[in-house]
Length: 613
Image 1: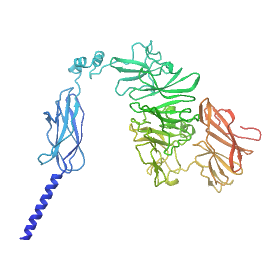
Image 2 (image 1 turned 135 degrees about the vertical axis):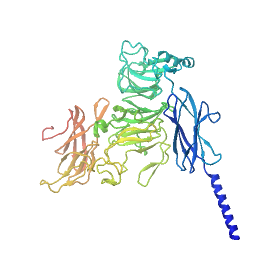
Image 3 (image 1 turned 120 degrees about the vertical axis):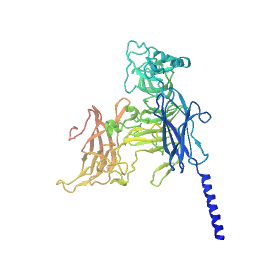
Image 4 (image 1 turned 45 degrees about the vertical axis):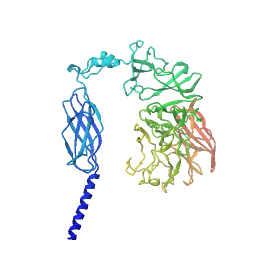
């Protein structure tokens, strides 16, 4: 008898536990509601529903008003099997009214249960209008409700899908045509602006132009055109630099003929007076690289003359905060240092190759479409830059905020502790650990990374590199880096001295000298391949015209009578011959990058007791 009572009690407890489980079961979850494949009279209704472990019934409701408080049409109930992941469901509805806005929601509940219904959020969709020949395009409504749209309707040529033409540029163009060029042809996302060129000029298009660029804007009274450069009182000449995606802000640089290498960076709107972003300064140059959508933060590159940047030919990257009228350097590392050879927004000049020439320039200065590539995120939360010389890609997070504190992690790296503040991340750092190189990396060593584009929010970047950066990368067989190799005169006893990116070689009784193809420095090592000095003679810049400096780009080496000579192929049809005094194991002295001037793209050098060739 006692056993039977215990069994009944146990079964009762089990029943209570089961009822408790039922009471606590989560109802279905409506993850999203969408529509697709809309026509004039039909549409596909879609939803994602998580049944939360139980079989679930669902249906759609649609009508002219919110279905939570008004009668609506319901689709037949359908069923989803039990599970714990969102399932996509859909159904097609027909016989809808053309050109009509409908409300939509989805309702779901667990099968075989009373109550427990859940409804998704209210959504709207609209069917397409009928073509004009079938009574579509409500012209009378356009005339009475929207005067601007009425003007559009009057210019319409009654196309079958209700398109209408508007003339964006003025009728009078001084007898000239409207033209375009890929670098300038841009339209605002909302369709209310277009950039165009007109060599003959446009009446009322203020701003004298070397490049005849104009902005046509659509307002309440129709289309109007404005010159995109500032008026003449800002400078005797000006240069158009760029614009925001909505064409609301235009950026230009203006200067004076008396100081042709000195500019002021300006911002203006269509037909509005300009405001100054960066002041007029000796040898200052500016290149617009991007801006957030509302123009509150502007990314640009600059040469010497700005914020302590006094080295001619060195480019830096800045973010200008409109609200506080302050500049923030973007190309800066977390220890407050910055690239010694400068940096560029976005990519290095990869079109010219991963060499000294290509790695010393890039970004907006070299004509890369940094805004289209999102070198700056649309909300200003990230800005990508490339270190000159190395071609390494970095991102500066929150560039207008104070620098985040850092700590040293287990790998000896300095990492930020507050990612809501400014922090620089090495985007192209190697993550390979199974290679034959140092630390399991690519034996070819560090290679440049060419920035291609980033997502609009700045969270993902796309770049190309010949370096194997991951354990699964395959850029070809693992290759040893370019090096100087020696052997005896019989070709025996071969020894690889393993110089980094070595090109050209010269020797004297005590040392081997070589050129680092990528850095542009001249290295030295003892004749027995010991004690390397990667920057025996550091990479240099040559001024090829007033205010313009480029990498010296050394080529060829020769040693004679205690001096080292080399050719500097700085730029096409321009170069010099360099010379330095050798002092045994001591550093070189009397370094003269322009020992011989006027050489035309020299590639090698030879010396005898009288002449340099």
